[in-house]
Length: 223
Image (cartoon, rainbow, N blue to C red; front, side, top):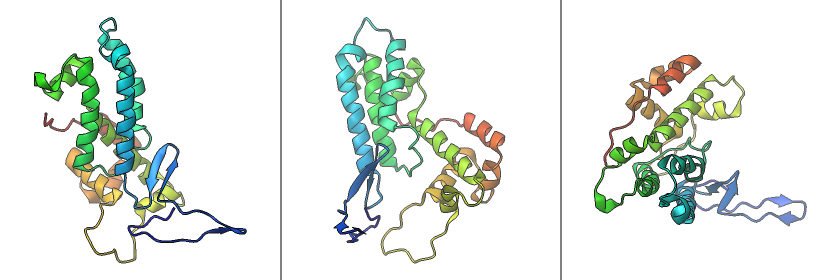
């Protein structure tokens, strides 16, 4: 697979055979595309999580004999890992992506609470009643925790070198994509008030950074 905005043909020979070039490739349960976008992977995760919810709907989610505690335990151990595949959260999340992931999560929680959209109960009220943390807050902690790992990596480690690298070639025409470094720097400024020029210094202190992430407040809830 060739990572490029435009389709590029690349002939790769192994002895006498040309390896087939593909537009998408799944590695460690994550779908990568030749354009480098994550929309298809997000769609796949939401579809898989929805399938889990449909499977568990009658046997778990709306089953009156099961307590909310049991349902939430299944939610944390089955639904959330399927939706997020934790460990692969450090990506640029657009507002559309945030909204879709949050909607998928609340669809499950509303059913656990015995509510529907027609009841017109705010998502924040449902989460407070069930004692569930905002999923996007978990994403942000994961992303900024990974930032701390990158900053503290010794020279020569590939992930750290990629994080610090500045492309020397000109970018193609069109609206530039948001680099993960710029995205997480803006996230740290918006959520923790840390300016970009001080970010690496603060994130480089393991205990200080960990304490800041533990105290990370939730975003204002739109619904």
